[in-house]
Image (cartoon, rainbow, N blue to C red; front, side):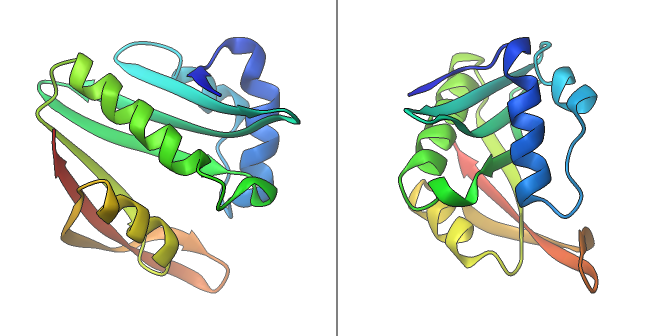
Length: 144
């Protein structure tokens, strides 16, 4: 199930972040995603929370702030479901376009985003922390 996040979800989301990110978001940073103009959604399986995503809608544009799915829950449609919820939220907020950054080496995520209508529109050099320094981000855009 994909649903809106609540403050009770934050400890579990912080644990997901710590398990999948090199530079995980803190619980206090996650909490900022519960306040407008940002909307946060969670993926909840029978075993509990397994992912989350957040989108900020400002002046007709939406930006995906983050999307994370626990390793054990990947390739099961949770990322797609979260992205579809974020896109629906952006449309509801009357955003006309959506942007996101993705690690240049994350082929699986890039493929998902392309399937959802995103196209590459730039590169942000050294955007992400990486185990061996920094990694570029591919900037992607989708018309809503």
